[in-house]
Image (tube, rainbow, N blue to C red; front, top):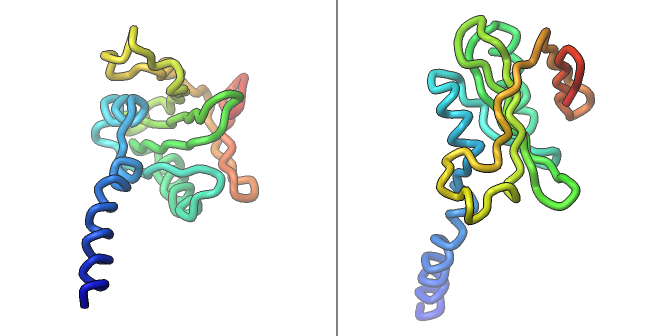
Length: 144
């Protein structure tokens, strides 16, 4: 009985320290939400996430229908974990890409709610293509 009580207590004490990693919001999340407030939020994924198929499916449907959506993809960069967001802010609107590198947030700009994001670039003639388990975003002149 005493041991069971200790395990439950230890679980409760450890849980809050795990929560920030599960629910952390950063400047890319804030920017995507601010620039596409009425969009379908398809969530966040990376190459190894179990939710990848669901997130990709969620992004494809509104993309093809021309309705507002937002999605975030996390990946590894040379010296940090970087991400990029993809969104459409209004029905029939332009699809936009927002790159993000958290290393760009530093004490000099940490009050900037969008620090580390590098502007929303319009994606001309966008095409989303599923290749194996990856989503390829092709914009006129470049691809992600």
